[in-house]
View 1 (cartoon, helix red, strand yellow):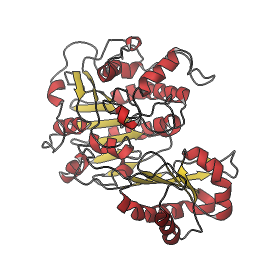
View 2: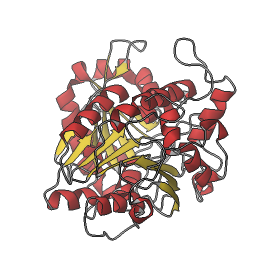
View 3: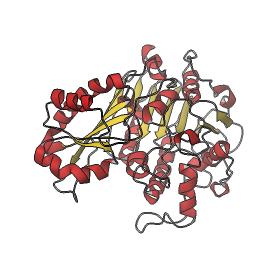
View 4: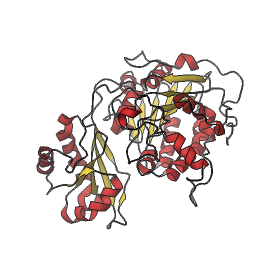
Length: 428
């Protein structure tokens, strides 16, 4: 009756990447710097949160131990009392880049060994021939932006002109991405999606990882707000992933959040979306209830990244972590004998770091299963070890990439608190 649940806290890195300097991120550490800011009172915000970072449920799975594995830094205030059937460790990414597709594909057993295409940090950012093709084939009077920019800032800058002229706002970042912002009413949501499909085809020769539709509403710069009707148009994975292998044998893969988009809807049985982390958590819990033997629930909680990491909002990120942590017992209570729950991330996005982009970091691997022995899985050489562990748990044949840590955590738990009992240091 084995089932697996893989929850991705988008951008929740824990520092220590061996190649961080290559990406200009030496010293970046999303968890450590948030915790440091909280401890020093720099993440206090009236009506939102106060004091040290309080994530007792993730701590009881070994979050502090995972962070220590990644960097050697101690997190004594997280406590050392762990659930007996919990496991913890960290993983180094081997894929090129520090973006969403690379991290997710690798954790699903497919490291990205090729280099993505990128747009230079110049104005204009896009090649003239691409811009001309976008305008011609997208049937628009022109484009606005054509530069590197944060999403909310560029909408404030060009939103009025976009509404007046009908020109979509096209922009990029250090990631392999071309983003298109357009008004849901004045431009039209379906028209935006159709336009992005045209752009997706045009950037394929440039090896651009994603084209992202970024709809917004509002009538003035002060009221423009991005909606949750975002849609990612990603390059399909070049080889079968864990998801393909599961669906090929008849198991279901229930994708929560943007997972379906990230994998170009390959290997996906069902997509469930909602607006915001807490609504997404509701969807994830519903998927856990519905999952059967051999199924995988793969959920992404994107707000950590889009709402707080990119916006360099330390207090908001900390509050989001605490809100997520408070709901973890609801997931624990749904675990049955034979289940496996893993919490991890796809990259970092240190809200104290310079700029507004992702940061190259190691990721936590923490989790639990009612009849697992748990323990320390150490530092994994690749995110692909996550996918291979899920594969082993769900009795799939070994894939081409990664090494399962399932043997290290298998077997019955011995002694100590277990799922269904109190969470050490927190609230059951």
